[in-house]
Image (cartoon, rainbow, N blue to C red; front, top):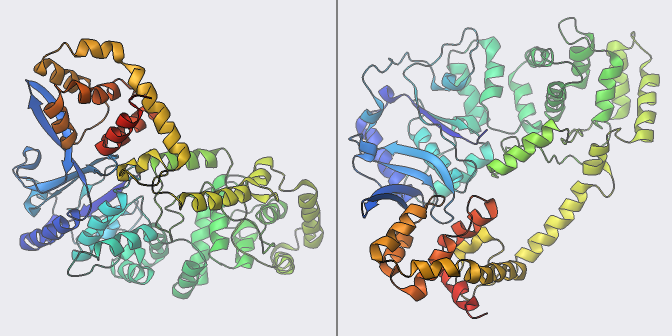
Length: 535
C-alpha cells in the first residue's frame, strides 16, 4: 500500500532542446521549495550519508546525464522514495526503445479494454511513493509543468486529485514566467475533447472518461455527463458496474452512492437494479432497503465520511499521508463508511417511480411504509453507523466541535506539534502542553546516557567520529548537522547533547519523531538542552 505520483512520457515526441528548456523551468521551481537529496560520502574509511537541498547534479547516479533527485523535504526531513528528473531527453531513450505507435498517451493509464490501442513507446519516469508527505504537492507541481509543456507526450496520474492539481499549479505559477494550466484530466471539458479525439471507440468513451477524470464525482460532474452523453450510455455504464456485485456487497453500495450523488435519474436506477433483464434483477425489497438505509428521502443528514480518501474528496487540495490512508481503508473494510448519500429525492417521488417501474412485483407503498417504520424503530440498524454519524451526539458531530476548538486554540501559537519544531526560533509561541512534554523529555535526556558518555569522553577524534557514523542508522542527517558533529566532536560540553540523542530508541515511532524533528532544527535542540541542563 502506498501513495504514488506517476509521470509518463513518450520521449520520441519531445524535441531535445524543448526538454532542456522545460528542465530549466523545473530547476526554477526546486529553487523555491526545499526538496531533499541524499549524498553518499566517506570519512575515516567509513561510508555515511547526509541530506542536502536538491539541485542539478552532474553524472547523476553514474548515468552520464545531469539531473536532480528528491527524496523528501529538508524542512521536516520527511522521506519519500526517489523522484529523479534528467536534463537530457536522451536519458529516456535507451537502445531498443519501443517505437511510438501514435496512440494518445491517455490510453497508457487505461486498463486493458477491447478495441483501445495501448500506447507504445511510453515510459514511466516517475512512479514511486510520496506517502503523502509534505513534498507531494510540490512534486505534483513539477509533473503538472511537464504535462502542460508537452500535452501530447506527458501525463501525470497516481494518487492525485483535481484539487491537489489546482493547489500545485497555483504554487508553480508564482514562479514561472509562462503560467501553466491544469492537467487535462483535471478539466472535464478538455478531457472529454481529448477522449473523443483519441480513437477510443464511442461505446468506451464514457468509461474512459470516468477512469481518467481527477474531479469529484458529484452533481456538477453528473450534470456535465448528462449533457454530453445519452441516458442510455449512462444506464449501460451502471448496468455493467452493478452486475459485478451482489446487492449486499460494498461495491454495489459504492456505485449506488456515486450514481445518486451525481444526480442521475432515480427511475432509471430502479430499472437497472430491479427491472431490466440485463441489469442486476435484484428484489424490490432489498433494493428499497438500500435506498431507505442511504436516507435518500431525508434532506438534512450527516454525509461526512471518515473513510473517504483525499483522492475521492477531489475538490479540496488535501493529501492523505500513508497513516491516514491506511486508517481509512481499514475503516472501510470494518464498515465505518457513512451509508448516508449526499443527495435528496422526495419520498413521494421514490414511491411514485418505484411503483411505475416494479409496482407489479410488490405493493410498493406498503413495502416502503414498512421499511420506514423499521428504520424509525431500529435507527440505522447498525450501531457503528449510529455512533459515528447519525446520533445527535455522534462521533462526527463531536469531532467537528473538537476540531473547531483545536483550530481556535492552535491559532494562539506558532508551534503546536513536534513536526512544527522545524520552524522553532527562541521566543516563538509554543503550545504549553507541547513545551512541557519537550522539557520532560530533555530532563530525561540529560540523565539518559551519563555512564556511557564518560567512556565516550576517553575516545580520540577519529574514534568519536566513527561512533556517530556507525550508529547513525535511522535518520538521514543534514550535511550541516554532520558539520557540527565533526566540527565539535572534541567539545565535551557541546557534543554530549548529540551523543544523548543517538541513544534514543529510534526504532520506536515516538523516539524517531522526537530525534528527527530536533535534528531538523539544531536551534531547538540547543535551546532546550541549555534550558534544562541544570534542572
